[in-house]
Length: 615
Ligand code: ISL
Ligand code: CA
Image (cartoon, rainbow, N blue to C red; front, side):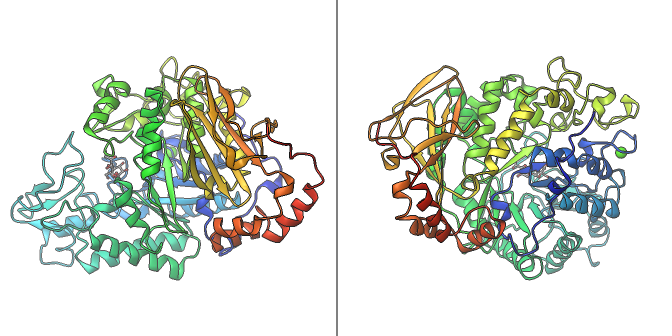
């Protein structure tokens, strides 16, 4: 297969100079890619860093801005690598530090950033710290973990991995004490009360920052500290420690981002941004995802409208991360019991599809591989507030394998071609780290990058175009969000506004064609221009604006201001909508023009004829 090469040597753009684009993460499209699952360079059946280097042209072609690598550190791999046994070593099957450095340089040379997962809450029980802690309670590592003589402490903390664990305490026969763990019993929690643990973690973070990573996804941070009489989540000292981490980043590592993974309600998650934006710059917005699935299946916008309305304001420098699944599952912690039953009934008809209280499936099978629904979901992902995070393989609609254990069913090898092992590896097919998907619909013979590159109408080509369209409008990453109501409950419409960049998104959540009448009086005189074809729609007037949508159809419109008005309140709009750092970085990058220039611009537009009267 020929991986598409960048169009010209000049498209191998270097990252902007350090310090010139500090809020890049607000406009970025993120792409989560498993080192183990992307490409195998040395035919041992396991994906590796050198294999990923070979595929960077593809990722650049797709148009993603930042790669997120889940843990690739030394690990016994009993939890997909989230069980780390050495924070500063690469798992040998994946390569070594030199390979990682090269990977990073090659990504940067293509203008892509790289953030890596960092699992600070727990380690593998194979970590030398734990081995020392259990065998030598009085030694240097004796207090690195949370030990107790019995298993009665912190009874109010819930169990997260309910499929496999019955307690957050496990007895260690070596130390003859119980250790605390929020996840698997082979993953002891580190003891953050111990300042030496805090130092060790900050040292490990520095190690990767010094190598040049662009930031971290901070895994499972709500659980760092424990306190009797609480549920041991989101405790004040946890926030204190994260603020400490942010200070290190701000002091020594410009442009790096901290992306907080806290599977919590928005009111709790906003705390992770800090009161003044002095904690994590980004946090995942968990509750949006299940509500997209509920909204579309019920053909009702309300689940989505409600969660958007309940989403609190965040500091100027902060940004949400949004996704269509929490990478390895459609997690259902942020819904009511009733809603969870509904989701299981609709999306996990086979009990094998469940994992703990979530659903371990990929996007395409969740949506019955329906093209229109897949496009609608991706359009919502790319247009709702926050930076979108894609999951490898979803761009071609890869399937899952519910017969594999834990969440491995969604971690199968990337499908590049219809050839041996889907072009992922030339090894003996029996040596694959996980079997390739062979399903008649989703198998690599049918669903692969090569065939979708050759089909101009494929999901892959479509998604690439939509990413390009998104990139042309900073408002998708930076703009305000305002829902536009209508009497048709199946249609979700909203306006994203950033200075003079105004986009209207209209989404039909129903499988049937729908009409909708939108109250767009605030945009009287504006011309909607459809963003994929740049076709001008009738000018907005004072009457309700009427649109018809195909089943699961959607529109993205640029709302183009009538020339006469453009000179008046531009300056004010600009100042309200921009935080200075973002404005500066956009100006530096030439993405938007300064207020004066906008005015000059609109002076010329005055002579145009685009400003028609009301309908
Ligand atoms: O989705 C969840 C459970 O249903 C989350 O609570 C999630 O498990 C939690 O946020 C932490 O997840 C992370 O650490 C886990 C690992 O298995 C997950 O893959 C990772 O995302 C434990 O190491
Ligand atoms: Ca390999």
